[in-house]
Length: 158
Image (tube, rainbow, N blue to C red; front, side):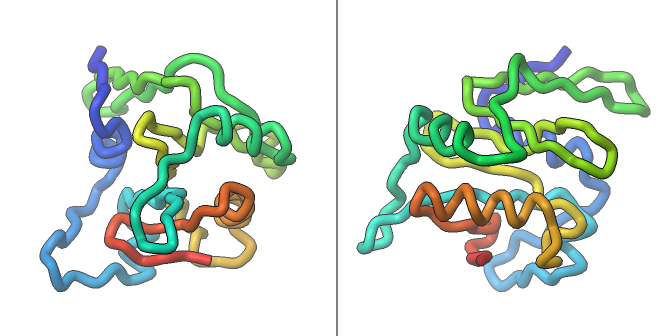
């Protein structure tokens, strides 16, 4: 079993991503790329001067408790590589959150709070659509935290 403490989403996203990403300075993230590869969005709060302001775990928990369709997750997250059977375990430092998906009546872990005070999640395939459950929830959570949704390459989402 592999255990990740630093940048846990990076390992998981790389694990499930089947496409490389252009990380050059002039790269542009197109809608198709976001939908076809592991791409993270972050709930980030900034001061008026642009400095990152951490989101405390207690704040995050309070907003989650007030939001319908989300709940705090218990235990660590695990995924198994279907090709190698390697089990990847990502530690839950107390801020992982699950989302309820009514179409199949399941709870799935989506949001991950980090001790740096940022919440991250993988952009689902339908993230660009206004009907995306994850996008609507993420936007509402960010609004309640006086924060923004910011992509890996700095783009801001409403």
